[in-house]
View 1 (tube, helix red, strand yellow):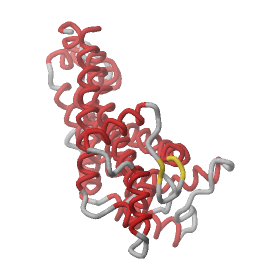
View 2: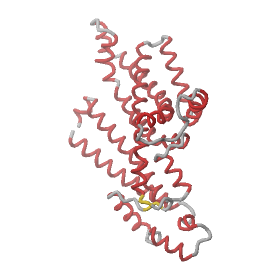
View 3: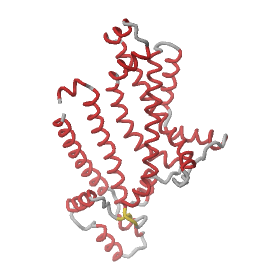
View 4: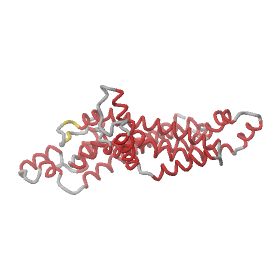
Length: 314
């Protein structure tokens, strides 16, 4: 097990290094002069040259990458030229919104999808099964941003139950959670539809195996069979999709935060791209990429803990 984790950890580090190189090269290959974009076309050449020197744009590309990567390891991502504050401070200020939103959406997705998937599999071929399948197909077909707009029209404009957007801060937890209800539902419904179908298929496959039929022949109840025998052995594909969806939920906040006008990392990256704030965009893209890579690492670790066959090999 220790060797398995070491190999996966080395792979994680190598992947993060490769991702950082790609992110840095792509950001620096974009057309246009960042100094000219920041200062405007009316700025003097001397001011532009001074800003290029301050941003380190006059250094060789390889040296700039080493400086950026080394500073990033210490939490120094440079200065945002749009907000004139350290990028790390911007991320720290926006993270308390994006992180709870992604966490709430993940919990809602996993609990809803597994419950619906197991319910549909246990009633295979019946009306409940067909209903779950129809709803999941509809959820897959609906884009999250369009669903978010529909939810705002219904629950905020027509019914006036929830706020249409904005975030009051965590000083008032009740108001803050109310503001996150519609964004959470918008993120979770689409991902729940995918996970519910995978859960149903995985549970049905396990239910057809010999040990599940033996358990039924021994007189165990359906709920006991599902809880003790079927669901633990159906978790491998489910964990795979959950790992992918956590990454999708975190990156999906980029669009949802802009729909609901939430001051999180998603809105920050849009503002930074519009302002050509290279250091902020680099840090945020690297952060989102790191979430995906680390999530895949955690999924690999979960495999080793869930599947006894894999545990024996490592």
